[in-house]
Image (cartoon, rainbow, N blue to C red; front, side, top):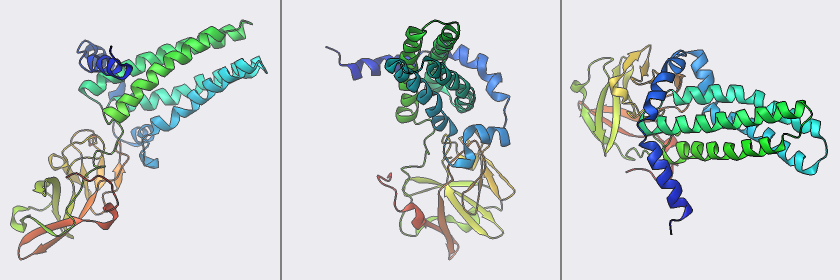
Length: 292
Ligand code: FES
């Protein structure tokens, strides 16, 4: 007998491989591309709060819808249930906008699962909207609300798969373990001013940039979706990611422009006898399960 986790896994893997969804993804691309790098994109991404905004916002509609159903069961105040559903519907607008923005930065399997996540949540919102209308017209609307909440559960499961299985929204350097001791990276003469270079140090790809103030060393894998920063460009003392144009300050790795929300890990760098050496910053020492 197939267990529920195995059946769900099979289902989601077939979704990840459903190339037929790509056409839908391409049709929606102009919508997401309409918001380019800048303040609006940062707002939708959650850059200012240091974590993706979408998971934060979903709590409002889900909480409002769940509270409405609980009130329905208690039969205390039908009007309050309708208002809570209305609140959930209103709160869905910014929630959808942030989700759409995050989805715009995905590719392949993540993008396909993201489409299924959006479609099920849209169906849920439709059912809950119909429930609100039915209640306003004097009907009960309860069956519609329960159906909507059940479909919302499917969307929520797919959202969980996106974050916890496919790593969308996760800092891609979370398990990065730079060397603890000073480690040879390259000859100083290998570095030209303002030209990003990637070197392999203790199995970790490290970005090196020589500037007037010295050599900067950062994790080369972009914290946003893992773009190779050494293929990016140096702009005003920042490295700009080649994939979605996030910018990180070369001095301290801080995000100066999203969609990234997490700073880029910085390594200490020094030059001894013409050789560049790097080691991890102590602030990075508390991470669990470093890789390698
Ligand atoms: S991978 Fe998205 S900005 Fe770097």
